[in-house]
Image 1 (cartoon, rainbow, N blue to C red):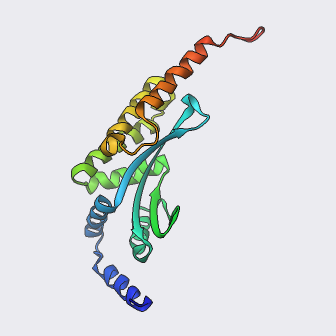
Image 2 (image 1 turned 90 degrees about the vertical axis):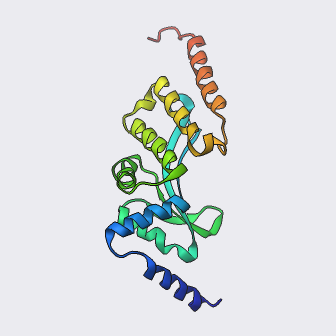
Image 3 (image 1 turned 90 degrees about the horizontal axis):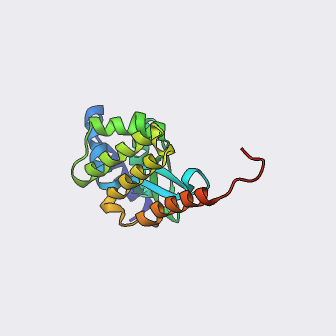
Length: 188
């Protein structure tokens, strides 16, 4: 297949994308249902409780079809498109700012709902984003609740690097360390 053939195919695909906003938005929802993900990473960081919770919405596509990612960016008016790290033939549309997730992405998928398992993950994702936006993760109890919600997503966190026990266990250890650390003389 020549480069001009690929351009022609991409052009034909673009012609099949609905032009009216209502149908386009349903099309994007269907596309996200198949090629998108609502993920929340939890990784070590020297902040409160030693972990940071990062929600993001992503849609992946081969570079030959990256035009659809730019349609997401244009329609949602947020996020960015970039090469997927370690795979130059794959591009990703990503929204990773909590305010944009809360104000733009979540309302979009409430108006144009997903179906099946993706909808269940979206519902948990929405709850986590709302709790983070409300700063509920600033308390140990709130942080623990959010972590537990995260582990209910995407097949119960099957592909997570850190287990639920590791994360929650480190919270107990940090609390124990704080209780056992004596105050230095002259400190209030």
